[in-house]
Image (cartoon, rainbow, N blue to C red):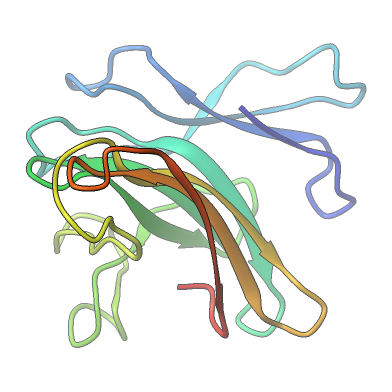
Length: 173
């Protein structure tokens, strides 16, 4: 689970949940707590991509972009042949729902699918070769200089070993 103690987030926890939802592996739910001990009932904030053979939404990370006024929820999913990949969805409200998904430049509304299912989401990060785990388990931090730092694990059948990597971007995706 991703548990955040941030004044903007007000004691929110985001976690994958393996309860059954249309044959998915898991999906992201949110709970709230005032003391970190007693939690609210879980509420779905992100449903997995339905167009894949094995839909799932795992390993959530969340960051706020003050310039764009959006919360970005990063999550891993599964694409047969590519294994684990990283997607991003966004919402104006930290409580979600995170329906708007990045679908790539030239599609949707400036690269975003506003209803979440008109286009297939486009991974923002994927392993350099197929096989193995892929690329996921992401952490994202927006620094004071406005740059986004991404840390993630990856493993492919070509590399045959786990790598912990970092990249820096000027935008949240």
